[in-house]
Figure 1 (cartoon, one colour):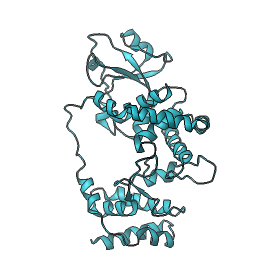
Figure 2: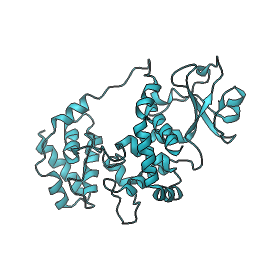
Figure 3: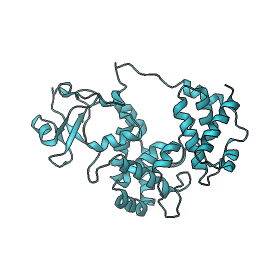
Figure 4: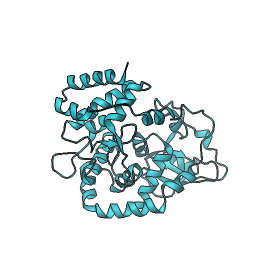
Length: 313
């Protein structure tokens, strides 16, 4: 099917779901496929093998660097009153919200310049993940119907946009008004962006008052593999297979594994020593899994947690 013919199907679907004719016209005028978007989608890696993982330490060194830490502390200080209010409202620490913001868009500096209408229509038409992107295209039309211009709705080639890099469907479900003006403008409002990240974390069941994890002492010769998880994760299996079984803090202490920052005794935690014996290790709480909900990568989640710790230091 030609792009123009397929676009008419997308428009009809959005119209059937209540999007106004004026929005459909301004969001689709002159649309044609973007070959760069197709190239970027096809260059994404396929399913990796189970052998070998890149070391974590170099990733942390480049993603929790002086620039991100100083930028995080500066933005944390500038938004302090907002963050205190958001923590009361949503139960998520301000430093976590700022760390996510820093990782996603460098505190708003890099939000992406692709026309989202074009990118999502192209990806749906191309067909590799048609159902996903057709749904996101319709969701984008609904976002636009709230009064956002096409020039505002720019983002990544894969459809994520705004300070928190939400997909349109995520925006519709979880974007929150942080400044009380009745809108959830994640593109232009810091308050709305941070409130939306907080709402995402609350929806993913962040446990208030519990850290994401703490560094841990692992005795020499300790066999981490002996305690590998026996659970098969339904999604992101390569992420979760690297974690140990969950045990209470006391059970880990009895095995010689000591948290370096106090944790409540009955807290259930998983041991994670990504770079092997003799390298840094952490005890991860269920809140670490909440970070993984945002981006299913141990590299991402660890760097967010460690950046948040540095911001709050």
